[in-house]
Length: 323
Ligand SMILES: NC(=O)c1ccc[n+]([C@@H]2O[C@H](COP(=O)([O-])OP(=O)(O)OC[C@H]3O[C@@H](n4cnc5c(N)ncnc54)[C@H](OP(=O)(O)O)[C@@H]3O)[C@@H](O)[C@H]2O)c1
Image (cartoon, rainbow, N blue to C red):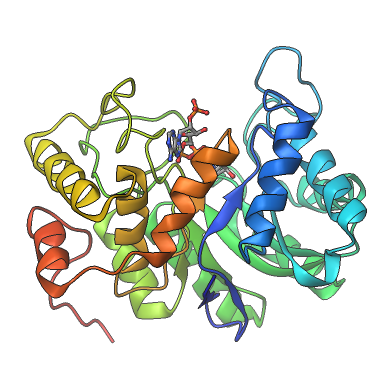
């Protein structure tokens, strides 16, 4: 598996990250470990968790994902080879609401380190923005945990573009660590601009352009829209039913058939082929789904195919250069 630069850190991460949201909970331990092993054997080294996965589900009060990932890393002895990402601020287990309160950030980092059984979190995201805490206060708290070497790099998930820009301006002015990447809801299909997804914020043209202009890596979550590109039992989800998206589904299905791959792999390959550092976070509940999605790394589009994929509607503003 190839790698992609993580912001301006000078470090690279696997071009396809593995989401661990339901590992060790609704996805049983054996299957979860098989998926982790298969991804690792394929060269994957980048794991995505959060301090609330999956505490919103009945019967799961604890962040099983962090526990499970930590145990797997320990058992396989792979800590030195992998990049571990987790998140703070969205519905944490001991606080059923969103918050980036500075004390909560410091406490949550210690708790995540304990659960993961590691010394340092490689990438810590603000899971969601917190309009009630001054940005200066939470950026200082993030800088503190980096300074204390408990966290190496920072990211922002579910943030509006202007709030990432403002946070990074505050960090630059204060000599603090900045957000090196963003993790929005992002896929080949673009949702209706009025669609709501709870606390999940879709990427916007502004966010995509801001990341391009300022060297932030884009890490799309829910990249296959629950497998919709390759499954008859998964219709395009609510909020994505638009005429442009119907055309996009036709192109995806056609290219999948021509190349003999799953439509979900085509959607992921489109992300990898974008002219921007983009690392989709794969979600899957079986090894077969993972293997189908990993095929994205081997898909090459011709210029004509890329034009066809991009001609319907794409992200960002054309020919803007704000520098
Ligand atoms: N920052 C955030 O707010 C946020 C939000 C959501 C997710 N995430 C992260 O992103 C990761 C991925 O998100 P996601 O799970 O929503 O991704 P997704 O790709 O939209 O959905 C994954 C699901 O789609 C189906 N699927 C995927 N590939 C398939 C294939 N090749 N064939 C058939 N079905 C397939 C499976 O559904 P079934 O299991 O039903 O078969 C799978 O569990 C998460 O694990 C998490 O780390 C972050």
